[in-house]
Image (cartoon, rainbow, N blue to C red; front, side, top):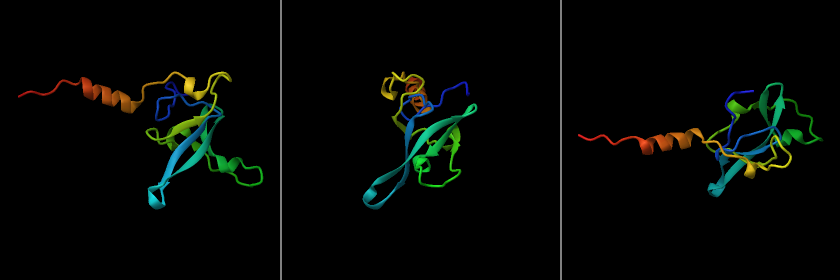
Length: 115
């Protein structure tokens, strides 16, 4: 497993079994459409599997990608899941500061240039 946990847009760590909502495209009347993925672990890696591939009546093979490469970290969100413990929901997990938050914080703390 990676040393740094993979987090969603809100800084919540992602675990196997989580359901992710990822923006897909903007349709008619500016409606945002989403793709939904389930996170699964195979060996040491986490993969994103589209929920449509879990339909038992469909015969589909493939369609998964590594989580760290396939996820839009600034816009993907966990919408369901319990993570490593069956008693802690994704809302109750401790948040980890995202790269965007670290960048914004460093910009705020940077001294202003004076001439």
